[in-house]
Length: 319
Image (cartoon, rainbow, N blue to C red; front, side, top):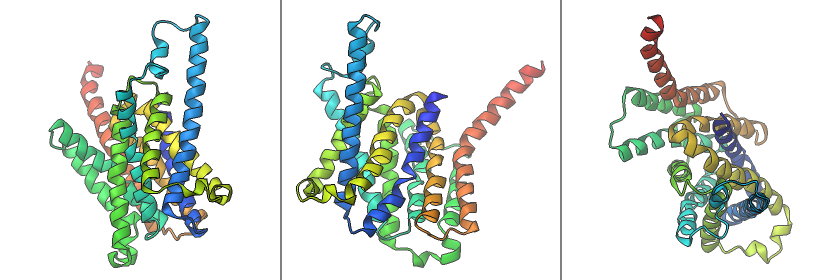
């Protein structure tokens, strides 16, 4: 249960981001500044937390309370550079998702952007089917139909018409969903033997380095860091770069990609609710209905599995 809760909280944290990005854009900050400060703050928080954990485990080992090789997973002094580089590469989707997703917010409402990002649910199913070389079963296909219908409702296409949406913004939002899918995948597959805090700090190191190469961090020396940009970076870094990767690297290896996608449903209502309350974006009852349909679609595969297991157990129970 603790692993499921960790992924749930991490997903809900992501739902906060779009609202604060729009507010940052409203104050004139640019994409590189927003993403750069987010990853820098997240990296610093992650590194401090990992250092605390590693020192705590080292003290425990020195006092004789640690048993076996429990401290080996921290990577302190023993994590090979090959593993570190692997984790840094696994952190690239974190940066890419932020860049693409935040850029989409320049063209489309936050409530629509989060709906598009949420398509990572069925994209993850598709990638898993390709990786396992298995055709999606009936439950998965049903899920895709439900998600498509819910997305149409939640995006407001039936009310506004497809022509009112910016094509580039929609495309960027969908690409962000693909990148986010890769982030979840790598969170569970990249060096799972390494402690979550250590994995998270190296993944963020890779993402931050990538962004700083694309957008040199001029805010570090031109004084902008000491303006309201730091406050936006603090919120975005905490809820977008520190908490989710740490909790995902902790929980996803134990619950699997499928359940992680289901728990990712926490992101959607948080984002839509904040965009409605803080940004005053109009969200109709039809769009809220679409949000509910999407959540049902995400949960459907696991509900179908549970129902199937119950049917198999029923004869034995009756006997």
